[in-house]
Amino acid sequence: MGQEMSVGEEGDASMSPAELKDFQGLTCFSEDDILHWYRSFCLKFPDGKMGGDDVEKLYTALFPYGTPARFREHVFRMIDADHDGEIDFREFLTCLAVVMNGNSEQKLRRAFCLYDVDGDGFITEDELSVIFQQMQLTGRMVLANPQHAQCAKNIVGKFDKDGDGKLDFEEFSKLAKTLPPIVDTIYRDVDQERDNIDKTT
Image (cartoon, rainbow, N blue to C red; front, side, top):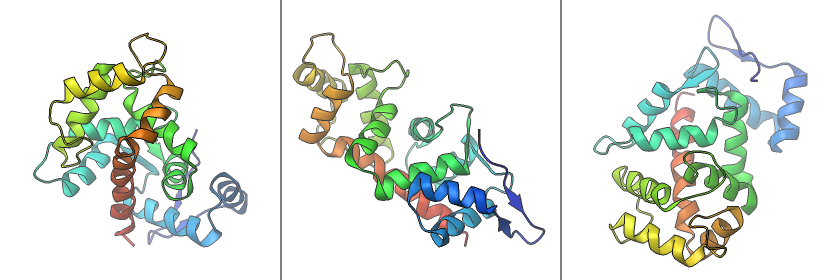
């Protein structure tokens, strides 16, 4: 559950000392950084929630000549930790902390959630192919080869060590070490959403 946002008549956002301390422990950000992002988030989303339409507008602004809607859904799913269809400030800040200061495993786990489209704990050839294709439509290339389905098949065949036809987190981790754009490309997109929100201040 997210915290309640408090926005004054002139758009001034406030946060209780307890909430501020909680966010510091959660993210290791300074008080000034947290309050900066909190005010930015409140100004952009006065009701304290970022919905799917809000994220799509950001993506449309970032990729006006692409087709961002479908890939937006995947990024949204990665950030929306409680899967309630909205992103609150806690979810936004937690993801931001991973993007900016997260260790390699934290970033890998977030990326794994994005590729694991159906949330069953495994990544299939079809899921890899879908994400590769949708990244390309936003102008973000993970692979130079446009044959997404064949590339996905080759990747799963190489890194699927237990032969079950899909990748678990450990297998995905080995893939990411061999092919860093698998993860890096995702975080460039999330980082751009952060910058877009910050422009409201």
